[in-house]
Amino acid sequence: MGVQPPNFSWVLPGRLAGLALPRLPAHYQFLLDLGVRHLVSLTERGPPHSDSCPGLTLHRLRIPDFCPPAPEQIDQFVKIVDEANARGEFPVLGQIPSVHKDSNSEKQQELQLQQANGVF
Image (cartoon, rainbow, N blue to C red; front, side):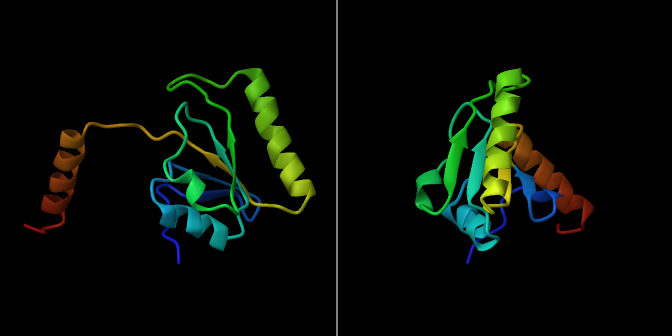
């Protein structure tokens, strides 16, 4: 059984979704469990453990961080989605690059959230 990847949500229910970088093999299993057969990576570096699910095809567009995609990359993404949908292989996922924060800032935010919720 898979685990939902960070920031997963449907753009077109059952046909196209977006998510942050999947980091665990269980994230890929979650996608397969939903019937996802294609993951479109929009990041420069490929997602870790992407080889852990042979039933999921990885497409890499390699858009530099904090840069818009080139028109050719947009066309390529649309082509991947259209071709997969035509074969009945939906949904297709677009992997949205997540903002990388340093670990101290993440820990500080987590502590502030816990304090706000009365955890300590």
